[in-house]
Each structure stands twice: as structure tokens, then as C-alpha cells.
Image 1 (cartoon, helix red, strand yellow):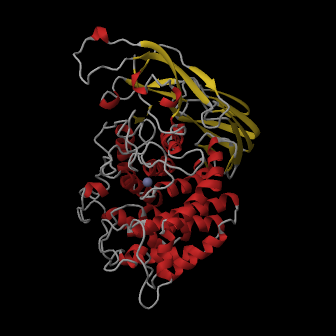
Image 2 (cartoon, helix red, strand yellow):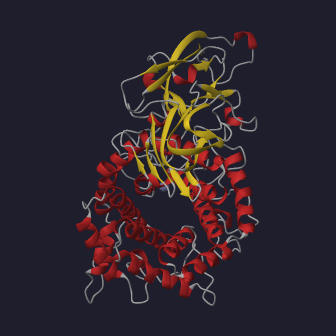
Image 3 (cartoon, helix red, strand yellow):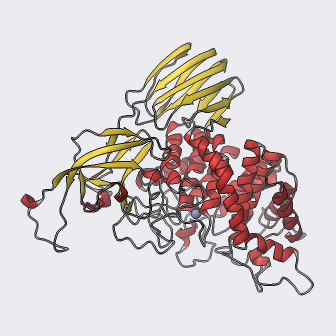
Length: 603
Ligand SMILES: [Zn+2]
């Protein structure tokens, strides 16, 4: 599978290789995350010099960066990081204890004992990221050194926390999916069993309560009963990905049933229109159903990445288009917005509204993307996702090829290969030329009412139906041209989303739009605008890769009141006519700090 480098997704992969991965490498060095390993590797008889640097899970920043490099080596064949990989492999081999333990925070901090405080130390979380890095490097380049280190970690986990071992789970799920991946890579059954035990042991309130209680780490109910998305959103979503991975290997239908209910809770009552998850800042958690404030949205970048990873596994489990649809929503909106056009500045939280006068001085809710964070989970998570993005675009089996993300590229299956030419997501024309014989399945987005298809050398059976796969029986050389209607549309939220009642979001194809202060005159604030839903929307094409399609909207500007609260008088609620520009939400905050909003009140 290969994305066209001129496509939007393909261009992100090029930017990731050229800028984001090198930026992550520089920053894991600058912040001491690699030095933590070096310090232990070079320790003399008196123990390590200096102190551990960064947050206690800093090892995971290094591992996610290594994973990104692994996928990138597999994608492009680059040897740019060969020296770094060799040096870090050396460090890991030297720091790992004979029993397989490896964690620079616990090993490098006096008084810490392995797995003594699993509710907060993130040891299995970090181990999981090491396993995933090793799998990526092994698949990408055949590297055996990292895999050997990872297998010793896997053996330790499978032994210490196996059938007869301690019933330890980690406060931050992640090792579940990693153990399943290590099993897939090595065929060692004990890793799969260890993943199973991690899943089965969660929800029995064995973790110490900590600041936010057992729901925070989904230890409040066993996974088959915990069908409301709750607690820390990244933990919830990583856990769900791990449970779904387990189902994919062991076929336990009760796990899939629980995941389908959980998915309905997360994506049906707690997701932002941008594909963001988690509305609360305090404990980085999901809120109540329909608690989706746009201005105080937390919507951590890692949560949208985790949501995509879970949806991918649900797609593999069921073949249902709705999972790919939500992967696309997250990818093109929340995830895309989290990185700037240089690939070196990032949002951690992804609000849908920034107010005039916002205090952006804290990294909790900055006005602009920052080059790095004290808690730096998101940037290297983006790097590993982007480096592996081509792997999410399509699947194949004996019957043919399935296209899930509509993007230009070349996709090869067992019986069928396809070249896709399209300017999607900016244009709705998707031309697929196939070689070989078999069934081509192309996802038709749920919003694409009125989509049409034209084929040569192929038979459509039947379609296209929005929200389903168009299935085409193809001869060698067949072409399939899918045309999606890209007319902008207005989207409203369920009445129960109080925070945006009476508002609409403007969406074109899969792309959510926003209005930014940068496009308004100084004497007109974003907060004054109301949208006229009956007025037409005009498209403006721009010679610019970031906002190639801008939208011109009409409505009115309401004056601001003299006092905060005013007697209600419906006759006074009028404004002056105004037209204004909307840009893709994923391109906001690229022109300096300023107000922005996705949800627009109606005139
Ligand atoms: Zn994060």
C-alpha cells in the first residue's frame, strides 16, 4: 500500500519523515528522555550519576519515536536513523536487567521497586510502547535487536503476571494491544495469554484509587460490563483497542458485543463533530453523555489517534463502513488540526472554539501550537501514526481489495491491485483503475447522498449507498469512477448537546470548517457572528495547500450589549447583514493567535 505523495495524506507522510520524526528525535534527546537510558547504561559501581529527567513515563516518548522510525524505514527504506537505532539498541540491551525488566524511571530513582505502584508508574504502558516499537522495526527493516529486547520484556510480563503470577494490571492500558502485536510477530502464545489476562483482570478494582477513582483507569467494572465510555479518554480508547485486538485473535463474541456497546456510547454520545474525544480538562476524561462544550473541549490529540486505532480494529472485526467513516473524521479534522504546516508544532488539546481574550499562557489550552510539551505524549504519537498511515487506507483478502480511506495511491491485494487518482478530500471525483480480477470495495461516505458511479470493464453490485461499501466485480483493466457530492452542508447536534443548541457546523465532504478572527475586520469579532441557514454558501478556491477550499458564508453581526445581563426583549434581537469566510478547522491557528469557532449560532 502506498499513498501518492501529492495527496493530502501522502504529503503528511513526507512532512512527517522530513520534519516531525527529526523533531521528535531532537526533543527526546533535548529533554533527557534518551539521557535517562544513557545514565543507567554508564552507571559505575556507585550507581548512576545525576537524576532521572522528565515525567515518569518519558521512556514511552523514546519508544513512540522509535516506532515512527520503524514504520518510516518500512515505508521509504531510509537508513537516515541507522546510527541512532544502533546506539539506542545498545542502551536498551545494557539497561535491561537479566530478568527482562526495563524502565529508566523505576531503575533510576532511589527507593522505587518494579511494579510496586502500577496505578501510576506506567511501567506496563511504557513496556507496551517498547513492544510496539520493536514490532514496527522488525516489520520495517527486519531488525532483531529491538525484538529480542521486547521478547525479554514480554517473557517477564507473561511469567510474572501469567496464569500463576501476580494479578497486576497497569493504570494506563496500552500493553494489551502491544502484547497481541508481539504475539502476531513472534507466534509466542504466552504473549496472547498475557494480553488476555490483562483484559480479564481489569475492572476488579485492584488498582489503588488515586486522585480520580477507579473509573479513571477503567478499573471500575469488568470489560464486558463497562459499556459506557468513561474516565481518562486515552486509557479508555487504548483499552478498547486492546480488547478488540484480543477478539480478533480469540474470537470471544462477548468481547465484541461489549465493544460494540462501548463504541455506541463513545461515538454516539461523547464525540465532538471533529472526531475529538474527552471533554474534561481536569482528569483528561470523558464527560457525561452529550457533555460536549466546544470552548472547554479537551479532545486530546492522543485520544483521537487512539480512537482511530480502535476503529481500525472494529473495522477489521466487522467490515462495517461506519468504523472507517469515524477514522476519516478523526484523521482529517481533530488529528490534522493538531499539527501545523511545518510538522514541528502541536496542539495537545483541540478545542472547537477559542474566545477573544483567551489566556493561552498555559500548555493546558494554548492559543497556538507548541513545539513540545512537558507531557509529550502527543507529538511522537502523531509521528508513529503518520508513518504508518498507508497501512490504514486499504485491506485485501482472497475475494479482492477494500478501499477504506479515499486517497490517491497504489494499493495491492492478493487478487486485485488498484491505482486511485483523486483530489479528495477537496474534490469528490475518485477514479480507480484496477489490475487483476476480483471484487473492489470502495467506501461511500455516509454524508454522500446523491453519489454516482460509472464503470468500464466491471459490474456494480449494487450501489452506491451512502454509509456502505460500493462493491464492483472487476476485470483486468477495469475503471471505477465514483463521484461524491461536495456541496457544503450544515450539521446540527442532538438537542441534548446544550453547549451548541441553536448552532450549526459547516461541513464540506469530510472536512469540518471554522471561522477565524484572522479573516474578519478588526471591528467585527467572531463572537458577534450569526449564520443565515437559508443563504447560499460560495466556494472560493485558493492557491494554498493548507486552505485550498474556503467557504463564503452569510448572516448577521449582532452588537455587543453594554451589560453582561439584559432584560429579554425579542424585538431588539437584530443585527446587520454580513458575509464572512470559513476555513477548514484543521488549518486554524496558522496565522497567529486569535479567536475561532466551529459552531455558529443561527441568525
Ligand atoms: Zn497525548
